[in-house]
Amino acid sequence: MPQTKTTISVIIPAWNEAERIGATLRQLDLLRRHQTVHEIIVVDDGSDDDGWRKAEPYADRIIRHARRRGKGAALDTGWREAKGQIVVFLDADLGESAIHASRLIRPVEEDAADMTIAKLPPSARRGGFGLVKRLAVNGIYRLSGFRAEAPLSGQRAMKRQVLENIGGLPLGFGIEVGLTIDAVRLGYRVLELDVPFSHRETGRDWQGFLHRGKQFWHVGRTLMHKWRHPV
Image (cartoon, rainbow, N blue to C red; front, side, top):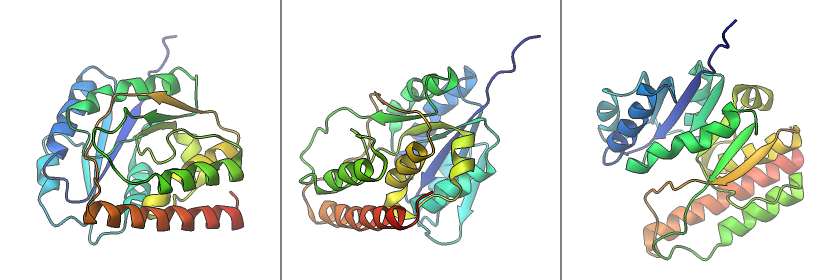
């Protein structure tokens, strides 16, 4: 009997991403035409812009939160509505580089990993001072024994069973850290690999420092929760 092809769902959380979400979804639509992905779900997290309208030509489903609930909540909403055996989380601002999602998917599809995490190329501009990343790296290692190189990467592919066994996802910007800790603690194979994704970068300006300050708080809160309440 012929093998049934593994179905793959891509979840895109979006908040005020009208500028780049169209380019991202066009690339994913190309992958869908080649049967690399089978379902595209966009979760609009209470945006003030019309990004969800720009997603309409490409998304199989658009789910809209009435108010902003955070990235973790958007991803949690998306994967629960997805039909795929493999679930892929991608940021809305990847633009043309979203075409490289196939590199992230392949090891999971081939059962070489249960979860893959994209390591992005070095930033083109100077960002922060690495405080959030160091907190995440050290926290993940202390709580799971896994030495992460890309602890904050939101570009991930995983078997659906990983999410089902973990249950609810952490809220806010702690989603990636919490997901890695839980997956490793449950014995799943986590693989980090180089993928040439590119997205909007934050610089050393007020907005950039404010964003990283929120990240630091959310990551710290997630680590404390995982220490007190292991999966």
